[in-house]
Length: 371
Image (cartoon, rainbow, N blue to C red; front, side, top):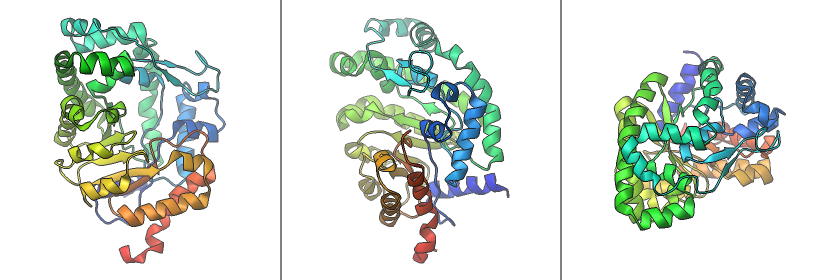
Protein backbone atom coordinates (compact mmCIF):
# COMPACT_ATOMS: atom_id res chain seq x y z
CA UNK A 1 0.00 0.00 0.00
CA UNK A 2 1.02 3.60 -0.55
CA UNK A 3 1.16 6.41 1.98
CA UNK A 4 -2.45 7.47 1.36
CA UNK A 5 -3.78 3.95 1.89
CA UNK A 6 -1.65 3.52 5.03
CA UNK A 7 -2.94 6.76 6.52
CA UNK A 8 -6.52 5.95 5.53
CA UNK A 9 -6.27 2.61 7.33
CA UNK A 10 -4.79 4.40 10.35
CA UNK A 11 -7.81 6.72 10.45
CA UNK A 12 -10.31 3.88 10.07
CA UNK A 13 -8.61 1.83 12.80
CA UNK A 14 -8.61 4.82 15.12
CA UNK A 15 -12.34 5.38 14.56
CA UNK A 16 -12.80 1.70 15.49
CA UNK A 17 -10.58 2.27 18.57
CA UNK A 18 -8.17 -0.45 17.51
CA UNK A 19 -4.45 -0.64 18.21
CA UNK A 20 -2.31 1.29 15.73
CA UNK A 21 1.40 1.81 15.15
CA UNK A 22 1.10 5.54 15.92
CA UNK A 23 -1.37 8.10 17.21
CA UNK A 24 -2.76 10.09 14.26
CA UNK A 25 -2.47 13.85 14.00
CA UNK A 26 -5.40 15.35 12.08
CA UNK A 27 -5.21 19.17 12.04
CA UNK A 28 -7.44 21.96 10.84
CA UNK A 29 -6.03 25.48 10.68
CA UNK A 30 -6.59 27.44 7.49
CA UNK A 31 -5.65 30.88 8.79
CA UNK A 32 -2.60 29.39 10.52
CA UNK A 33 -1.40 27.83 7.27
CA UNK A 34 -1.77 31.15 5.48
CA UNK A 35 0.20 33.03 8.13
CA UNK A 36 2.98 30.44 8.22
CA UNK A 37 3.33 30.54 4.43
CA UNK A 38 3.23 34.38 4.38
CA UNK A 39 0.18 34.47 2.14
CA UNK A 40 -2.09 37.50 2.39
CA UNK A 41 -5.59 36.37 3.41
CA UNK A 42 -7.19 37.92 0.32
CA UNK A 43 -4.99 35.69 -1.83
CA UNK A 44 -5.33 32.62 0.40
CA UNK A 45 -9.12 32.58 -0.08
CA UNK A 46 -9.03 33.23 -3.82
CA UNK A 47 -5.91 31.49 -5.20
CA UNK A 48 -6.89 27.97 -4.25
CA UNK A 49 -3.97 26.19 -5.88
CA UNK A 50 -1.54 28.32 -3.91
CA UNK A 51 -3.58 27.79 -0.75
CA UNK A 52 -3.67 24.04 -1.30
CA UNK A 53 0.10 23.86 -1.76
CA UNK A 54 0.54 25.91 1.41
CA UNK A 55 -1.79 23.63 3.35
CA UNK A 56 0.03 20.51 2.21
CA UNK A 57 3.40 22.03 3.08
CA UNK A 58 2.24 22.83 6.61
CA UNK A 59 0.84 19.32 7.02
CA UNK A 60 4.20 17.95 5.94
CA UNK A 61 6.08 20.16 8.40
CA UNK A 62 4.01 18.83 11.30
CA UNK A 63 4.05 15.32 9.79
CA UNK A 64 0.27 15.11 9.90
CA UNK A 65 -1.46 11.84 9.06
CA UNK A 66 -4.68 13.30 7.62
CA UNK A 67 -6.52 16.60 7.32
CA UNK A 68 -9.92 18.05 8.10
CA UNK A 69 -10.14 20.02 4.85
CA UNK A 70 -8.07 20.60 1.72
CA UNK A 71 -9.02 24.22 0.92
CA UNK A 72 -11.36 26.79 2.44
CA UNK A 73 -13.54 29.71 1.42
CA UNK A 74 -15.23 32.05 3.91
CA UNK A 75 -18.15 32.24 1.50
CA UNK A 76 -19.05 28.78 2.80
CA UNK A 77 -19.92 30.28 6.17
CA UNK A 78 -22.86 32.29 4.86
CA UNK A 79 -24.49 29.16 3.45
CA UNK A 80 -24.20 27.51 6.87
CA UNK A 81 -25.53 30.35 9.03
CA UNK A 82 -27.74 32.42 6.69
CA UNK A 83 -25.45 35.28 7.68
CA UNK A 84 -23.09 37.63 5.89
CA UNK A 85 -19.35 37.26 6.21
CA UNK A 86 -17.00 40.21 5.89
CA UNK A 87 -14.38 39.16 3.34
CA UNK A 88 -10.67 40.14 3.26
CA UNK A 89 -9.97 42.33 0.28
CA UNK A 90 -13.68 43.13 -0.16
CA UNK A 91 -15.12 44.34 3.12
CA UNK A 92 -11.90 44.23 5.14
CA UNK A 93 -8.21 44.92 4.72
CA UNK A 94 -6.41 42.50 2.43
CA UNK A 95 -4.77 40.59 5.27
CA UNK A 96 -7.59 40.74 7.83
CA UNK A 97 -9.42 37.68 9.13
CA UNK A 98 -12.83 36.91 7.66
CA UNK A 99 -15.64 37.69 10.10
CA UNK A 100 -19.20 36.42 10.34
CA UNK A 101 -21.42 39.43 11.03
CA UNK A 102 -23.97 39.06 13.82
CA UNK A 103 -27.25 40.79 12.96
CA UNK A 104 -30.85 39.94 12.15
CA UNK A 105 -30.44 39.02 8.50
CA UNK A 106 -33.79 37.20 8.36
CA UNK A 107 -37.20 38.41 9.55
CA UNK A 108 -39.79 36.35 11.40
CA UNK A 109 -42.40 36.47 8.62
CA UNK A 110 -39.97 34.69 6.28
CA UNK A 111 -40.69 31.37 7.95
CA UNK A 112 -44.00 31.46 6.09
CA UNK A 113 -42.09 31.92 2.82
CA UNK A 114 -40.15 28.72 3.55
CA UNK A 115 -43.44 26.85 3.97
CA UNK A 116 -44.71 28.20 0.65
CA UNK A 117 -41.52 27.92 -1.44
CA UNK A 118 -39.86 24.90 0.11
CA UNK A 119 -36.41 24.96 1.69
CA UNK A 120 -34.12 24.62 -1.39
CA UNK A 121 -35.77 27.41 -3.38
CA UNK A 122 -36.09 29.72 -0.40
CA UNK A 123 -32.49 29.12 0.69
CA UNK A 124 -31.13 29.74 -2.81
CA UNK A 125 -33.07 33.01 -3.12
CA UNK A 126 -32.07 34.17 0.36
CA UNK A 127 -28.37 33.46 -0.12
CA UNK A 128 -28.38 35.16 -3.52
CA UNK A 129 -30.03 38.30 -2.19
CA UNK A 130 -28.68 38.65 1.33
CA UNK A 131 -25.57 36.51 1.71
CA UNK A 132 -23.03 37.88 -0.76
CA UNK A 133 -24.54 35.84 -3.65
CA UNK A 134 -22.50 33.05 -2.18
CA UNK A 135 -23.33 30.17 -4.48
CA UNK A 136 -21.92 32.13 -7.40
CA UNK A 137 -18.98 33.38 -5.36
CA UNK A 138 -18.17 29.78 -4.42
CA UNK A 139 -17.85 28.53 -7.99
CA UNK A 140 -14.04 28.96 -8.11
CA UNK A 141 -13.80 27.02 -4.84
CA UNK A 142 -15.90 24.13 -6.16
CA UNK A 143 -13.96 24.09 -9.43
CA UNK A 144 -10.65 23.89 -7.56
CA UNK A 145 -11.77 21.21 -5.12
CA UNK A 146 -11.17 18.10 -7.30
CA UNK A 147 -7.61 19.02 -8.25
CA UNK A 148 -6.83 20.02 -4.64
CA UNK A 149 -8.13 16.66 -3.42
CA UNK A 150 -5.81 15.04 -5.95
CA UNK A 151 -2.86 16.97 -4.53
CA UNK A 152 -3.69 15.82 -1.01
CA UNK A 153 -4.10 12.26 -2.26
CA UNK A 154 -0.68 12.40 -3.92
CA UNK A 155 0.75 13.74 -0.64
CA UNK A 156 -0.76 10.76 1.19
CA UNK A 157 -3.25 12.78 3.26
CA UNK A 158 -6.87 11.60 3.56
CA UNK A 159 -9.53 14.21 4.28
CA UNK A 160 -11.76 13.27 7.22
CA UNK A 161 -14.35 15.97 6.48
CA UNK A 162 -15.63 16.22 2.93
CA UNK A 163 -18.47 18.61 3.76
CA UNK A 164 -20.65 19.86 6.61
CA UNK A 165 -24.12 18.73 7.60
CA UNK A 166 -25.91 21.72 9.10
CA UNK A 167 -28.79 21.39 11.53
CA UNK A 168 -31.88 23.58 11.11
CA UNK A 169 -31.09 25.05 14.53
CA UNK A 170 -27.74 26.45 13.35
CA UNK A 171 -29.15 27.93 10.13
CA UNK A 172 -31.76 30.05 11.86
CA UNK A 173 -29.74 30.91 14.92
CA UNK A 174 -27.34 32.59 12.50
CA UNK A 175 -29.91 34.16 10.19
CA UNK A 176 -32.21 35.44 12.90
CA UNK A 177 -29.31 36.35 15.24
CA UNK A 178 -28.65 34.74 18.59
CA UNK A 179 -30.91 36.71 20.91
CA UNK A 180 -33.83 37.03 18.50
CA UNK A 181 -33.77 33.34 17.63
CA UNK A 182 -33.67 32.12 21.21
CA UNK A 183 -36.31 34.48 22.61
CA UNK A 184 -38.75 35.18 19.79
CA UNK A 185 -38.57 31.86 17.95
CA UNK A 186 -37.68 28.95 20.23
CA UNK A 187 -39.45 30.29 23.30
CA UNK A 188 -42.43 32.08 21.79
CA UNK A 189 -43.21 29.93 18.72
CA UNK A 190 -41.93 26.39 19.31
CA UNK A 191 -44.68 24.77 17.20
CA UNK A 192 -43.71 26.83 14.17
CA UNK A 193 -40.04 26.00 14.67
CA UNK A 194 -40.81 22.29 14.76
CA UNK A 195 -42.67 22.63 11.49
CA UNK A 196 -39.86 24.59 9.84
CA UNK A 197 -37.15 22.29 11.21
CA UNK A 198 -38.98 19.25 9.81
CA UNK A 199 -39.16 20.86 6.36
CA UNK A 200 -35.45 21.70 6.37
CA UNK A 201 -34.35 18.34 7.74
CA UNK A 202 -36.33 16.33 5.20
CA UNK A 203 -34.83 18.37 2.37
CA UNK A 204 -31.29 18.27 3.75
CA UNK A 205 -31.30 14.48 4.13
CA UNK A 206 -32.01 14.14 0.40
CA UNK A 207 -29.38 16.74 -0.49
CA UNK A 208 -26.71 15.26 1.77
CA UNK A 209 -27.32 11.72 0.54
CA UNK A 210 -26.70 12.86 -3.02
CA UNK A 211 -23.68 14.89 -1.91
CA UNK A 212 -22.16 11.81 -0.29
CA UNK A 213 -22.59 9.94 -3.57
CA UNK A 214 -21.21 12.76 -5.70
CA UNK A 215 -18.14 13.42 -3.52
CA UNK A 216 -17.38 9.79 -2.58
CA UNK A 217 -17.15 11.16 0.94
CA UNK A 218 -14.92 9.56 3.55
CA UNK A 219 -16.28 11.60 6.45
CA UNK A 220 -18.45 14.62 7.20
CA UNK A 221 -18.77 17.16 9.97
CA UNK A 222 -22.06 17.23 11.81
CA UNK A 223 -21.73 20.70 13.21
CA UNK A 224 -22.68 21.87 16.65
CA UNK A 225 -21.76 25.43 17.52
CA UNK A 226 -24.49 27.45 19.19
CA UNK A 227 -26.42 24.25 19.89
CA UNK A 228 -24.39 23.91 23.08
CA UNK A 229 -26.04 27.04 24.47
CA UNK A 230 -29.36 25.31 25.10
CA UNK A 231 -30.15 23.00 28.00
CA UNK A 232 -30.73 19.26 27.65
CA UNK A 233 -34.50 19.57 27.29
CA UNK A 234 -34.36 22.06 24.43
CA UNK A 235 -31.44 20.22 22.85
CA UNK A 236 -33.40 16.98 22.85
CA UNK A 237 -36.41 18.73 21.37
CA UNK A 238 -34.85 20.99 18.74
CA UNK A 239 -31.35 19.74 17.90
CA UNK A 240 -30.83 16.06 18.60
CA UNK A 241 -33.37 14.81 16.02
CA UNK A 242 -31.23 16.30 13.24
CA UNK A 243 -27.99 15.02 14.78
CA UNK A 244 -29.43 11.51 14.97
CA UNK A 245 -30.87 11.64 11.45
CA UNK A 246 -27.55 12.81 10.00
CA UNK A 247 -25.68 10.12 11.96
CA UNK A 248 -28.06 7.44 10.64
CA UNK A 249 -27.55 8.68 7.07
CA UNK A 250 -23.77 8.52 7.46
CA UNK A 251 -23.91 4.96 8.78
CA UNK A 252 -26.28 3.94 5.99
CA UNK A 253 -23.89 5.40 3.39
CA UNK A 254 -20.65 4.09 4.94
CA UNK A 255 -19.39 7.55 5.88
CA UNK A 256 -17.62 8.54 9.11
CA UNK A 257 -19.71 11.05 11.10
CA UNK A 258 -17.58 13.59 12.96
CA UNK A 259 -19.51 15.58 15.54
CA UNK A 260 -17.70 18.91 15.45
CA UNK A 261 -18.66 20.33 18.84
CA UNK A 262 -17.60 23.87 19.66
CA UNK A 263 -18.12 25.31 23.16
CA UNK A 264 -18.95 23.33 26.31
CA UNK A 265 -20.99 20.16 25.73
CA UNK A 266 -20.58 18.63 29.20
CA UNK A 267 -24.33 18.70 29.91
CA UNK A 268 -25.22 17.13 26.55
CA UNK A 269 -22.77 14.22 26.25
CA UNK A 270 -25.35 11.67 27.43
CA UNK A 271 -27.24 12.12 24.16
CA UNK A 272 -24.43 10.36 22.29
CA UNK A 273 -24.42 7.25 24.49
CA UNK A 274 -27.04 5.31 22.47
CA UNK A 275 -25.02 5.64 19.22
CA UNK A 276 -23.16 2.58 18.01
CA UNK A 277 -19.59 2.52 19.40
CA UNK A 278 -16.62 2.53 17.01
CA UNK A 279 -18.60 4.31 14.29
CA UNK A 280 -18.13 8.05 14.87
CA UNK A 281 -15.76 10.79 16.05
CA UNK A 282 -16.34 13.27 18.87
CA UNK A 283 -14.37 16.39 17.86
CA UNK A 284 -14.03 18.59 20.94
CA UNK A 285 -12.60 22.08 21.14
CA UNK A 286 -11.01 22.14 24.66
CA UNK A 287 -14.08 23.71 26.31
CA UNK A 288 -15.81 20.36 26.80
CA UNK A 289 -14.27 18.17 29.50
CA UNK A 290 -12.58 15.61 27.29
CA UNK A 291 -11.95 13.24 30.19
CA UNK A 292 -15.62 13.36 31.14
CA UNK A 293 -16.45 12.56 27.52
CA UNK A 294 -14.26 9.46 27.66
CA UNK A 295 -15.72 8.41 30.99
CA UNK A 296 -19.34 8.77 29.83
CA UNK A 297 -19.00 7.32 26.34
CA UNK A 298 -16.47 4.64 27.16
CA UNK A 299 -13.28 3.37 25.49
CA UNK A 300 -14.92 2.47 22.18
CA UNK A 301 -15.71 5.98 20.95
CA UNK A 302 -13.10 7.91 18.96
CA UNK A 303 -12.28 11.39 20.28
CA UNK A 304 -10.48 14.10 18.29
CA UNK A 305 -8.84 16.99 20.08
CA UNK A 306 -8.15 18.86 22.05
CA UNK A 307 -5.06 21.02 22.52
CA UNK A 308 -6.34 24.46 23.62
CA UNK A 309 -5.82 27.02 20.83
CA UNK A 310 -4.54 29.56 23.35
CA UNK A 311 -1.83 27.12 24.40
CA UNK A 312 -0.53 26.86 20.84
CA UNK A 313 -0.49 30.67 20.61
CA UNK A 314 0.85 31.66 24.03
CA UNK A 315 2.29 28.50 25.58
CA UNK A 316 5.62 26.77 25.13
CA UNK A 317 6.51 23.61 23.22
CA UNK A 318 7.09 21.86 26.54
CA UNK A 319 3.59 22.76 27.74
CA UNK A 320 2.01 21.51 24.53
CA UNK A 321 4.05 18.30 24.53
CA UNK A 322 3.15 17.58 28.15
CA UNK A 323 -0.52 18.36 27.54
CA UNK A 324 -0.76 15.86 24.67
CA UNK A 325 1.18 13.21 26.56
CA UNK A 326 -1.04 13.49 29.63
CA UNK A 327 -4.14 13.51 27.44
CA UNK A 328 -3.13 10.26 25.76
CA UNK A 329 -2.30 8.71 29.12
CA UNK A 330 -5.74 9.65 30.45
CA UNK A 331 -8.09 8.93 27.54
CA UNK A 332 -6.03 6.88 25.07
CA UNK A 333 -3.99 5.95 23.39
CA UNK A 334 -6.40 4.02 21.19
CA UNK A 335 -9.36 5.82 19.73
CA UNK A 336 -7.74 9.26 19.91
CA UNK A 337 -6.84 11.63 17.09
CA UNK A 338 -4.72 14.59 18.15
CA UNK A 339 -5.51 18.12 16.99
CA UNK A 340 -6.14 21.54 18.41
CA UNK A 341 -9.56 22.35 19.77
CA UNK A 342 -11.44 23.41 16.62
CA UNK A 343 -8.81 25.21 14.45
CA UNK A 344 -5.17 26.03 14.96
CA UNK A 345 -5.34 29.80 15.57
CA UNK A 346 -3.70 32.11 13.07
CA UNK A 347 -1.20 33.33 15.69
CA UNK A 348 -0.10 29.88 16.86
CA UNK A 349 3.64 29.33 17.14
CA UNK A 350 5.03 26.82 14.67
CA UNK A 351 7.17 25.19 17.35
CA UNK A 352 4.09 24.61 19.49
CA UNK A 353 2.17 23.03 16.62
CA UNK A 354 5.11 20.76 15.89
CA UNK A 355 5.30 19.83 19.58
CA UNK A 356 1.68 18.71 19.42
CA UNK A 357 2.50 16.36 16.57
CA UNK A 358 5.76 15.16 18.09
CA UNK A 359 4.04 14.25 21.35
CA UNK A 360 1.42 12.18 19.55
CA UNK A 361 3.87 10.41 17.26
CA UNK A 362 6.40 9.61 19.98
CA UNK A 363 3.86 8.45 22.55
CA UNK A 364 4.03 4.73 21.80
CA UNK A 365 7.84 4.82 21.87
CA UNK A 366 7.90 6.40 25.33
CA UNK A 367 5.04 4.20 26.61
CA UNK A 368 6.04 0.68 25.51
CA UNK A 369 3.33 -0.89 27.66
CA UNK A 370 0.87 -0.09 24.89
CA UNK A 371 2.83 -1.73 22.10
